Length: 99
Image (cartoon, rainbow, N blue to C red; front, side):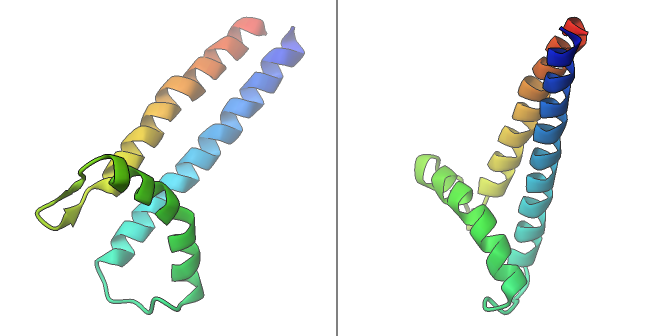
């Protein structure tokens, strides 16, 4: 059973790493949106392609633009933190019990 515990522990660590990276990307994209940067810059395009599908989904289902301020990055970060605290923590607890 310790092998399954180690597998779940590794999966939890990878999910946690990807979620942390995505939160970092969302924050960078939100900060870039405050400045006038070249939209044809390859880095800006990659950041936009990585975040816009999720942000567009949130904007479509929730009224998150209030007073001209877009709160969709904040909602996505809150969802990511919830997934980290719930899913990753649950997988880690299961892995510890299986070891």
